[in-house]
Length: 384
Length: 226
Image (cartoon, rainbow over the protein chains, first blue to last red):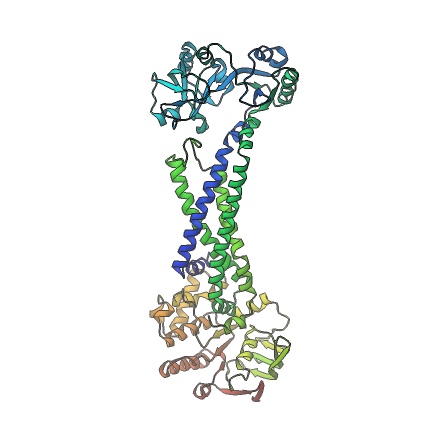
């Protein structure tokens, strides 16, 4: 701590240069935090899914192909229920409210098992009772209701983009969730969707909850084995694997985003290295004087590294604080449709701090080593 | 002989530039008694600063042996040499070499940061050193706010603040005007007489040399008088 003053004064010696470096670092850090948050938001579902034992049964050719309704009979048979419970038909409706820009997650779902299957959702009992009693009832997440200004008993019309129908729904309940992202959904009844579709019994996916983790591979084997030679073979996946399908579709985007993050980090290191090298070069004589006074090469390395880490850390704190205020505090999102939430996760904060410290250390490593290794007499002789 | 605070025996220094060898010092023998002040004179390139650097432990001789305060410098590691310098050497440069981003007080405090003294103890030492050089009223001034003479006095305070065994001064008046030169010489003389500091001063200036108790002449890397 007694050297902090020296480090601070040296860092602020050339205020314009340090300011520009901090500004550049801050900008790059903001980009890095943004990129990392985009990645974590893309993977948020997978992360949340890991804690549940939900599994999905989908058509082996993909989600665009519906499953036969008679598969439900098998899924309700003892062979399956021995390993799973709370079977639900769940169709991604893909509708919007009023304007295509108002796009959000909406599903036609078997209402009777929603509370048991999606147990992270907190649905008030009276809301659930109303939903069971009212075929065109819908329950919406609190966050989504707030976003669109929806109130209980309000009638809304969803415009179908996949199904050729426009469900006229009445909001009968508002649910909350420990994961705020789950509040960006709307559920209406599958039987109402089927009625609108003329009773075609279209099933997008079947969902259920495995009784234990050990039951999951058994369920995959039993269900997919049963449908293997049928006209509608299935693929049974965990919720995490289900989410990963969407990530796989964006595989290149993910790699691109990750590569961008790496490039940003490299630019930051090079920019800081340049500043630190210039600063150390200008102080060759001063460093020699310090060593004449009894400071060691280790002290010199410490001073140069500390100065560099100070610059990158300040450059990290500013955008991190701004990002936390904008995204976590004010709940702003760069793309509300794709990212209903754009939350800086604790993991991102840790990575940002680590990136700042590490880039500061890497950037200063060579200049620090050169400064410490230079002979004192050479340093004293040099006129900078 | 064991009374000497500085003992230089058969020291030679050869610089190598590519394949070329440049001898700077040849068979130097010098002893400085405790409390003695010695002026090291000689033409440019005669090796005065090199000899001073060797005694300070900031350069190593090619041959020979140097002892300061009873400690043999040969065989010391860089870390040991740094520790030796912080304890036994006070160095005064021609161009003062104060750290421009630190105040006079902070510059003087610098060598004390290497000690285990508390902040309050450091303050006492710094104020004492600045009092000796007569600059207690300039403690918050940065080097750019001081005159050349004042800067050199701060540099002297920095050199004496740890109460080193030897003061080494490399052309301490070389960059000063007449008045400041006189002030610095009086100060060095006072440090020698009053505080019994051993001083080795490199100088071109006969007036500065006259203020020392003994003058040693170096010519072409060899001692002419000792």
